[in-house]
Length: 345
Figure (tube, rainbow, N blue to C red):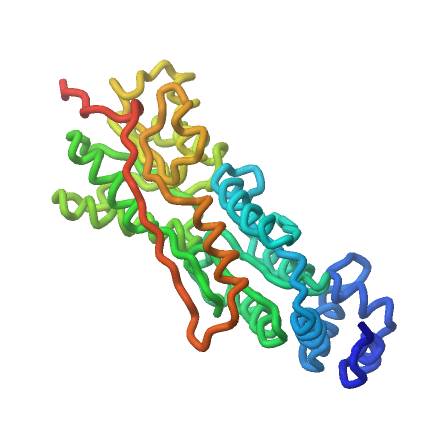
């Protein structure tokens, strides 16, 4: 289908930006060989001219939505693998192709992935995983995605983001509360908390749940060791080593995701610390492998696959005047890694 005469061409963008067509193409595609200053200038010109917008308006007018971009923080994290399976399942039923991108929990890389997906004429974008606590860290991403949506593109996010789009909100605060309340009911008072980076809204929300559960039990989170480290298995491993060395009186460790909890269990096994007889361990997410660990992991189940399904389903719906939001449920899953606090003495 020929491009309407009124639609800006790449050559028009290049001329307005004062660069060659090749430079304009590389800038919009996010490829190497162009300085960030020049690339940012070309992108600004393209957005101002409606170049990307007209591409998406033309695609949707023809009824063809063929490619979905999914941006995850860690491609190897089972949490994101299960979200991806939900997105892919819905996409397969609609005859869509899913392109998965990895941001590494870096807002600049996330922005780069968003711009690349837009430049490649992706028709819908799902941003999965945590948002960032500072709105400024997602300001450019928000601007790019708003322009994308104004041109007919579809967007949904999973988690609490400073992005104007439909969203699926995991029950992160409730999950943090549930897992902490469980340990308190077992008699634990000397609890260590392994959290991810404090710039992530997921971490802030889960910690808020931990704090409210502690307050209900007459404790303060300020009295507990809370260690911020990488939101990964390796982060949990390194964090557990440090907490054991600095706080040998702990009787329980809460990891704010299951990947970290797996690292914790590895450390305790290497130190010969019996779980749960000497130390209880709990996580959040309930990734598929959690039930198969030895001991099996007590955690809070979040519906990751369903979250992916909901996000893409929302993104493919006609735009709404008001942003849609779906909140998920949660379920405490008690397994073998938690038990009564050991007697003092």
